[in-house]
Image (cartoon, rainbow, N blue to C red; front, top):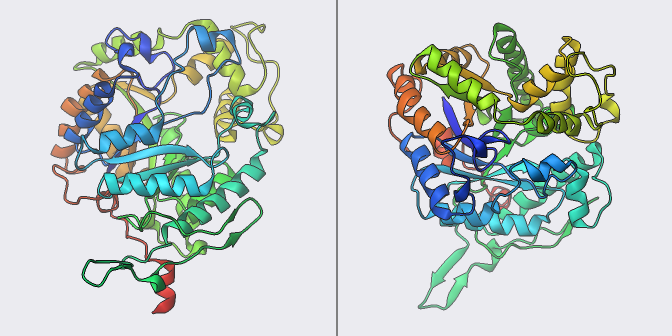
Length: 443
């Protein structure tokens, strides 16, 4: 199976992870903190380190400043430094297609791919909040349809720029004085609805051809884009029950079933459900650790997180009664995937208190190493997952527990590697290196 080590927040997998007794919030802007974490993930033979990012401070509610973790380093700078401190693990940067330009991102990711010797990945996001829009000259975030249209074109342009130089274009012949073969350099000359980019890129074609494309959207537009483009998909999970397994199997087949119409093979895409294991050496210890993790978020912060996702302040409603309204997903302009998950919980009759607790502590799975491995193996073997994107209740301790206790159990069962067998991220994932579009035309 494929494993990603996910840093959703720099201190752990939920917004209050920084409060965990074993967390190290003083390290959030310390390079050695991140180096230790990623080197531990590499010791555990993870395929990639998955760094989440946002382009704003969540100040919609007072608690977002007073209680939430709102500090995180810029991803390309951080991952470039981590490339020098690691040898095998992939490095996935979250980058918005709404608040960047393709040339910038093509250049940065190509450089990261070179600095890491072929380990770069791009988590393609469209962003989702007005807070981000206001940092980039807009009052409102782009509507859902337009931002996915922009994202599609953004990826097209970026990959086109990565093809600027054919793989053998650089001659570097000191004797003749020829640096490059001019016939193997190509201008993109793109003119579209959102971008006009002439090219070429001033970085040679990346070692992987294209850095690996990662995506997390599960809306209809998101699934179509993933089936056409993505090579790794991070999937949300409702629960790790039989019901959750069935839902993930349906999502898995839905997404993989769309790929043929884009000329792609099912194996060209890895689907990784999110999981946050709370590991105890006994079931009792696991339950105690889960209770500790769930106690970290103050009630007001939990309510505000739920209000954020619903697009409406719910703090005045009775905590022990169901919400008296159901948001209209068609009129919603943040993450439709997250809202759909909340709507499913509303339809089950959860109280407001239960809702904010579930939203705050999503994806938690408490158990012994053997129990955690049981769930992961079952989902992997029953067609619900190609692996998992693993987040941690706190860092670095949650990652240490997983690497020391769960990874050996997965290895013992023969479902996870004992050693890296390749050098690039594409080799780890079993993905082909894409051919240069211009070289194919010449042949």
